[in-house]
Image (cartoon, rainbow, N blue to C red; front, side, top):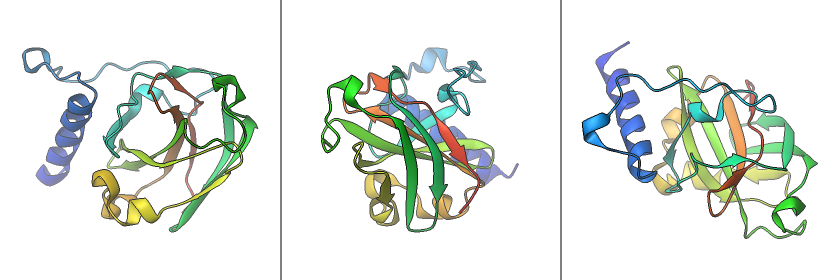
Length: 169
């Protein structure tokens, strides 16, 4: 791995620790722990680094919403809601309680974060915020991603849906 790629990987991990209030320089691990994925997750939720979007979502626990069928293009994404957000007390059109979080697999690392609000009535989201660099989003990393992962997280960062992935662009 090139020095630039290695530095980017380290910076993303440090940034994730900083925004999630988990950085203790006296105990920074040499290698992150591997946590087994929940059977509902396509990849381990712990592998997702919340680097962009300014949201602390890494401590969310799996809750009732279930999503599937992630499709990603340059300008938008779509999902299927298998179980909606009513378990969080949100109506189909209430977009004030749930966040759309996208992750890009770049150089073997899952980096990303919040990019928009979402509700059960919204199965598609555009990437205007990502393309404008919202919350530090890296357009170049988005464009060169090997694959994508998506999860819905409650606005308080305590609950989440299952994690889904795709390889299409």
